[in-house]
Length: 308
Image (cartoon, rainbow, N blue to C red):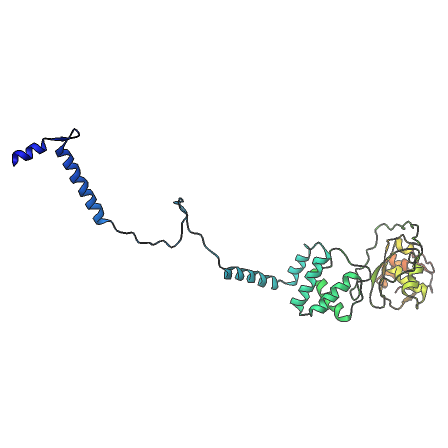
């Protein structure tokens, strides 16, 4: 038997001694036994999916429909809590009257609990030149005070219930150059001075002078007084003009009774008379074109002048 073992161990297989092949086989078997006996299935502890091939990828947060809804609600709450000052600042970014109309109606309904029908009617009439009711006028004044005036202006005559701005006195008055009147057409009232003041835009030969405007808006009043009252609110070049070019804007005030002052020895200077009655010298002159009284220096004692 020992001789048989030595004979086997001395043989070669494909040129490799049998002892070498035996050692390699025993080592390989040991390695397989060692690794197969200790291997375990790893626990699946992953909580998020990671794209394959990206060893540095991290999981991304997800948002549910409830999260989006909450964000929208938060934005709505912030918008609803805006103050009047914030709404006014927002108005500065509005470029059209349509945008202003939507904002005004929304603000009145949300902030003042005004019925949407009243708010919409007030805004529509204001922009189109209609006549507002007292309720609509009050609502409109609240909206304008909060978000400002329409960015594109309004149709003449639509300022019912709202005091128009005081006309700016020109620094260097110039008499407008009368234009050739358009074909004669009946003058149309663009507002109601019994209700409130407004701007009139000259359209043709039937409304291009103080005489025509006085007849149009104050037919039942003394015409000289009517012309003088309108001149008061249009001092300077307009007050002195005999006619106006088409497109000229004339401020028509709400009617109120005339007030006069009789010159006495204590107060004779035109400037003093103007100051005493809260007028500028230019406005005092505008009031007294008919009959024309030059408001300069001392006036004759006993002279009666309009001071309205």
